[in-house]
Length: 291
Length: 275
Image (cartoon, rainbow over all chains, first blue to last red; front, top):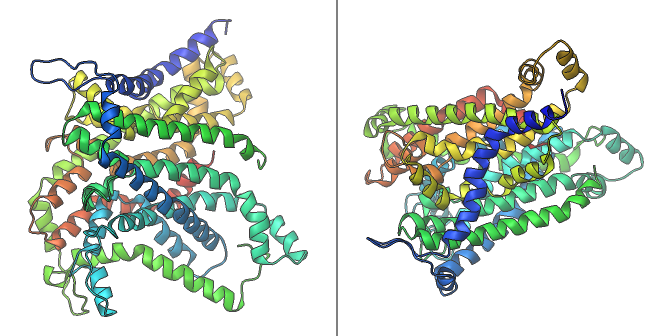
């Protein structure tokens, strides 16, 4: 190959992917910012430059602030629990345990099912009066409770569904990491007389740190991305207590057709994801210590 | 945890119990759905061993909405997305792995941006784009934003980089062009990665919902997930037996595929997750 053909070949091979990425990732990110400074086009009137008007509306919009707060609670509820459960599941199915194959299938199955479909099942589970949960609580003699219809429990119900859906997925990454770990470590530790919990705390867990970071980043992204079950189970209600940012964007953009305001709201989501990207970049060199 | 640690005594028994309780909890919703779907409606919330089995819920669900068409749409969608991804990501990954072209590192960074800013969150602008292209309410509109997949490019690049350069050079000496080398050397050696990526991609797009519900507006383009949502949210008199039957129907191909190829699925997700 001559001097230029490397460049020509490289760029030609990259071109289709680069064009599609530019059209559906980079351009939209910039266009979102641009459109957030405009009003919606009305009949016979073009979209007009309104400067920061959409952002001013946002600051005064209680539903936006509520969705933002809900999203933080949702993240706080789903991330630590799903990661902890994933780790526990992985340790279990990596060791010697009766019915290992069944356990693996059981933990992983929610991952392959469509969220929209399983949300229907969970909706039935939470249904007042004749849902399974109600039947169980009434057997225990507890008073009837509308789990999804009550302001106090609706978001927690969605958190449970999300943890159920995600933990098995994260388990896989821990399982892969555990299987890649040298058995010599455990043997040496056992000879030295280290207890199993001690070994986990001082050896296994630190060695799993890169995996934990990877799973953490995914869990954070998912907490801003997963809203399918909200569409099925609560539609953001009651009183917006289950409205998350992306769900609110969907509501504003495609139910009220206020795309200009939806663009401004999307900028908040992009800013959050950008912060996450920077955070990951900073953490990246810590990760390499372990590799 | 490991062979070095003997599992015996109460602690181990307790752990086994814990694992089984959690596993049963984890599949309980699915078992519940199976119970409701395969029994007459009067048993949907009543558990009796004498309850007769029936397929009538599936027949009713199938006849109540154009599920056949939704199945066709979803299969067309996942096929289009997968074929597009495989071709486009292979070419890009090959460029990143083996061509030191001008601007490579910068371009790679720009590709990785998509790992964070996924098409799932760009719904507003992508809707505008599809509108401008005049392809709203079509299957390509659902799939296009996902075809250049940063994840796919990243995964294949990692795999291609592990392939010895000598193989590449040997093929070149025999006069093979860049594309021939890719096709004859790299693609065959990356087969496990392709399988892994394909399983992840198919299950992702079979299950995808938010973007499809935004861009589609008619039976001819709706995938299963959207069809199921419209079916179960319109007034069916909330007949849970029919809704759960429809729910199981839409998940059945993935569920069956997963149970049959369980090992490959788990290994694929593992492979795809190792970075």
